[in-house]
Amino acid sequence: MRNTTMDSKKPCTRTLGVLGLAILMLVMALPARADDDFAISLLLGKPGKLARALGLNAAQVASFRTMAAAANAVAKPLLKANAALLGEIQGELGAAAPDTCAIGQQVATRHQNWLTAKAAYLKFDHDFSALLTPDQLARYEALKVAIGAGDETVPGSEGVDG
Image 1 (cartoon, rainbow, N blue to C red):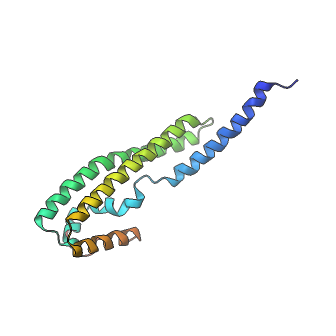
Image 2: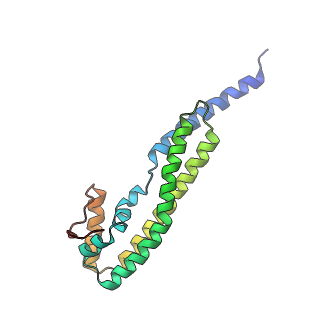
Image 3: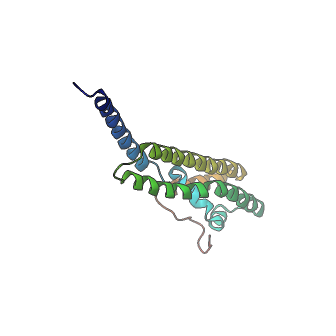
């Protein structure tokens, strides 16, 4: 006679194994920072360089600083938490008996953090772009494209710190 309890656990074990593999793939695909908006996050960290590169006036610089502070106040703690969560997830995945429920919750939290950080950067980008002249906006967009392509310098800002 077959043990029905044992047989019913096998599909569950397979399902959990597949779920664990899917979670691992998702964890590796999710960035620790808001990668799609890395250019914006990088530019927020260099206000003096960005102001010089775009030729911002004093009012624009003041608005930039206020908007950047608001975006960073939301995004930075979440992205820092995501880095810690990634370590926890990787540690859990390396355990002899990973808790797939805990991992799933950590992945969901990490993804929500990333979405919230991304939204903060996109709000900054939208609001800041609205303050710029057409020429400044063209230069700002070009900077974001260049940074997205791997060039993390801010042209036109030589000799300016941060």
